[in-house]
Image (cartoon, rainbow, N blue to C red; front, top):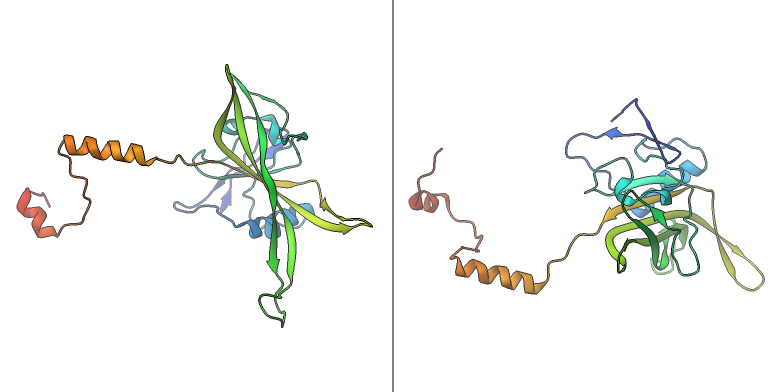
Length: 226
């Protein structure tokens, strides 16, 4: 993999584009993002690949305006921003070219743990190591009638550690950097739409059966140029 020499400055950070071979995709697991990328970034260790760009404040731009990568694919960014999330789980307002919006937290977050290898105890009693926290956010876009729920989803990955106190157990973030994964949620086609499309196909006498037919049967129905 070869990194392009030219780097663009976006949002106060350096954005590097990486040319992957055709057919290759960057699809790391949650554990791989925390153990091999975020932890190495925080502790200034060499990264496996320079594929995740840096953005100083990811909450300053609309999701569609963020650089690097195809909008149809999941995009990853290093950022030190926290979005100034308020008590209702909403980030500060983001002003775009033609409209505005904000990110809102979804759920309470998910702890990412991995089993400790080399343990002689059973799987049910196996000790696990806490790697970090995964938080989900959804983007809401301003309209004339209010705010519209969009298909933009963002996952924030942070390294955390547990610090026990006198009364309860507190969870603290390690370092300033976080990894953000941004993508658009796929549209779900309802059963009513499928039923209407099948009815239209029957009216137009369109064959909806996609069963594979033997090659000799196809040659009997029509001429096929080979």
